[in-house]
Amino acid sequence: MTLRSSRIPLVLGNWKMHTALEDACTLADATASIAAAHPEIEVGILPPALWLVSIHKRLGGASAVMLGAQDVAPQPSGAFTGDLSAEMLAPYTRFMLAGHSERRHLHGERDELVRDKLDAAWRVDRVPVLAVGETGEQRASGRATEVVARQLEVALSGRSAAEVETLVIAYEPVWAIGTGIAATPQDAAEMAAVIRAWLRALGPVAPERVRILYGGSVTAANAADIFASPEIDGALVGGASLKAEEFAGIVAAAGGRAT
Ligand code: 13P
Image (cartoon, rainbow, N blue to C red):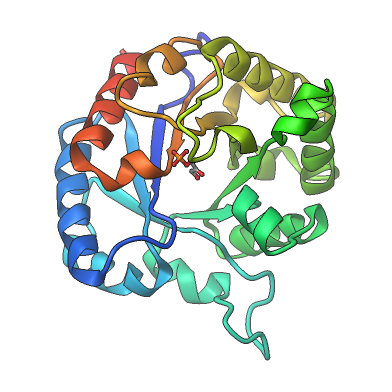
């Protein structure tokens, strides 16, 4: 099996704190149609948590689009005002995102907390999506790979192969998020290769089995170039996932990648 064919491309739309309920339902319907037209890949959306129950009910169990949570608390329950546990999210979701740079930078979330969030997702048998990435300043000073390696090390060292192989890693350089300046396909592919080399050094894990997505200003126009590398297995899309036509273009590009 080649590196390329052993992993099904995955496109996730992170809606962040956007949409009113009515818009969310309309967008979910449109995304479900897009996903149904591309059974060769996997498509998911991460709506605001408040809309998950409604969207889950609306789409039904047979929908081609999977749902995910933008964040998850480490603890199963307790006095954690404003948080949602993996147990609460599990009935409605397949994916749980941990370590998004907006959580790291706006909420001061540290690598150790991100590690605990991965545990929470595994505890309820859901797929954690680990987001990693360097700031512009860190890249400019030549420390991009060191920063990403540190994020991986704290989150993943000591994990079993079974755990790591059920993980999705999203490489999202902070400077590319919401800026309209995506990483070059070469930079994205190079970092994905660095991540796989790091995973290989972890021991029993087969890095060929771990999906690595790119995120940061992905659009319908640049998706095909980004997906051209066999190292990149799809995208974690922000702004463009809120526009059905744009998202359809990205999904179609990933579909091209699957064949
Ligand atoms: P943009 O696609 O809007 O740059 O956001 C990327 C992102 O943060 C996805 O999680």
